Length: 261
Length: 258
Image 1 (cartoon, rainbow over the protein chains, first blue to last red):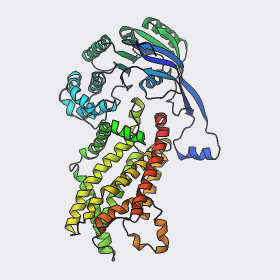
Image 2 (image 1 turned 90 degrees about the vertical axis):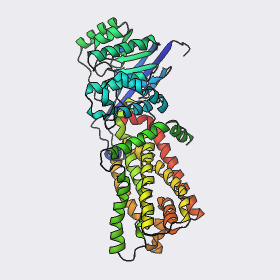
Image 3 (image 1 turned 90 degrees about the horizontal axis):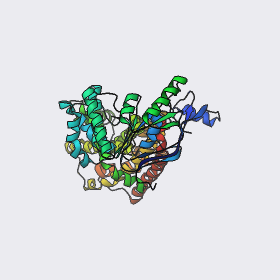
Image 4 (image 1 turned 180 degrees about the vertical axis):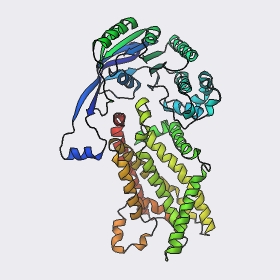
């Protein structure tokens, strides 16, 4: 890792899951093991042998069909999954969440959630107190900030979540379907913020099914298919190839994988 | 072990926030709020006092003090375990989406129950005053059994938090185990009531050394023997060592199973 301009380096990363058929989370499995009965399963590589670098200040889009490994890859970059093999190296601070609002608790108020989310992402209480006002201003949800989050509309929820994730100012932001909600005005605000982010030399990895968004916002796009990189190039190129893949074959639908091999 | 201390310190603010969140959610929507933490032991005490001192003859004098001195720490132990068993599974959504140190969840479960335990000492003090039971200087000794209790509880919570990820039956089995454990531990009765030849079996129960420190200090105004203090800390540290080792061994895989 001698190249100082690299923010994320993904090297030959594989994530293998063990899909247990007729899976039960119970002691029965244990008995089955004791009785030397085989639990039926198959191993399945959600991501296999993927490598790429993301430079600082780049916005990279990740596209592909359902089950192509986008989210798994994102989770490995964010540190939620430890890869079965290969390494992911991230330089600088990273907002370790792959979905906006992941750390929200519905019974707590917006204000309480700001603190809890910040702490979950590894920031100190002082930092969060300092940034609270700016987060509240950006989210712009008025008095609802002191109301339990369960009473929010989904738009308000996402506004707060986006405000928290970006206002804490990570060097690397990794997000799944970031711009899917919010009204037009708020979407514009988000896009502005992403631009500022890039201008400040920060790195974003974006998963989206909104190809227009990918084309407009990203410097580069990676097309994943069956856990492998098919195209790593300009958004136009990747989207074009994606159209071909999507049209050509049946989508690979995979049930939520569980235990790992 | 140093890892446990280091991480607990590093994530102290998060642990505290999670523990407070737990209590807030538990009490927020109730009219009496935190008063429930005080009322619960009071009401329970009332019931048990009536049953044991008025109906069953020959019980201990000041039975309420006798009972609560051990029941409160036991409640802390059993509640922490029940909470912790669900602490990883219950936070599945979070664990699947945010990179977060897993140990904060069981530790927060213990911390929130510890706040409850400390609060529940207020009714105990009130009851000691009301029954005119003497206030012994040995109250000052209570931090020692408290330390052993917390260490023992942490160890057990790490084990059950991890085990329940793999086998969801564990949470149910735990409830049954806790019930049986409660009755075979001399909490509502005194060990003296047990015929001498069976007492040795009761002494195999590790938690009795820890709990005994509370009863001796509060009810009898005595200090435990050095042997029993050492025994309590050995049990506590063995539990913590084994529990945390198991937890640490599997923590990176939790995300695939929750």
